[in-house]
Length: 129
Length: 129
DNA sequence: GGTGTTACTATCATTAAGTATAGTGTATAG
DNA sequence: CTATACACTATACTTAATGATAGTAACACC
Image (cartoon, rainbow over all chains, first blue to last red; front, side):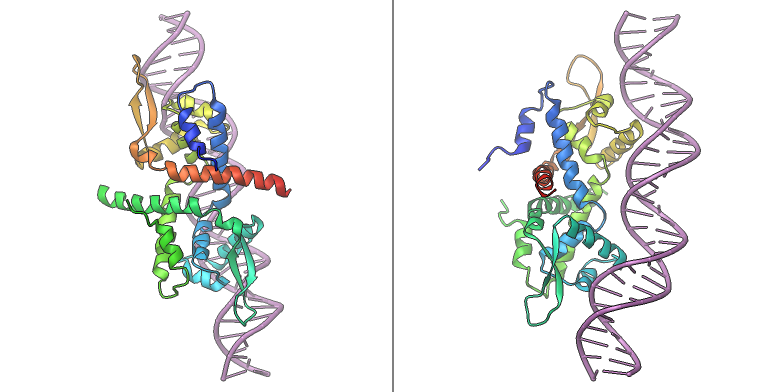
């Protein structure tokens, strides 16, 4: 039960000129995350799968404008990173569907925050212009 | 005090085939966020500034391998998006420093989650290989 | 068993993102 | 007043990401 969150630490160290190590560490960690979810389509795919396991075409229809090529490519990378797997659909057919792994689901908190921020940002932009 | 978080809603709707609208909405919001922080350097810059207001060269020294051109370019975009501003350093000098705006600071939750996930992911990769 | 759908792959073209290098006006220190 | 650091900008180049288009094996369905 680590109550002190990492960025809480960062805030404590905000004015500690002697510890640029923590800044570097934070940057690297954030870059690691971004590296895994980078590109135009990976997060949309993951979001689509949070709404349920889906087969190739179902994901494709969920995401406007994605091409087969990109969907195939991104799914492959997500499988490599163990965020997504193929499983048999839970019915009498033997159709294969893509599903988030338990590990893939650990991205949920981050995605929630990006979702909330994105909604708010869209509102802000509307106000401003 | 909106206790029901957006993705909580999403989970409730997970098996509601009749509402693909929510899936689309979630994807768009997440893409909006990603659009603002995309690229290799924007998050490192923001992280650097969470450790304190800094001038150009100080940020540059914080972030290994970033070039002047990219730093200038990314800072300009961050200023356009109102996440960063230039202010006078809080001392007797009239040095200008870059600082996160209050709006820029609203990214903190998202960055925290990316930070936590990134740390964990790095550990996982070490275990796996 | 012919037709359509599914789940891809291959190839090539285009666009976007990032790098390398050099240069310039302004501020600051000695 | 001069040298150096600072905060950029300009140009050219390279690499990475994405798009457009076509094709194909496997399966499903009448």
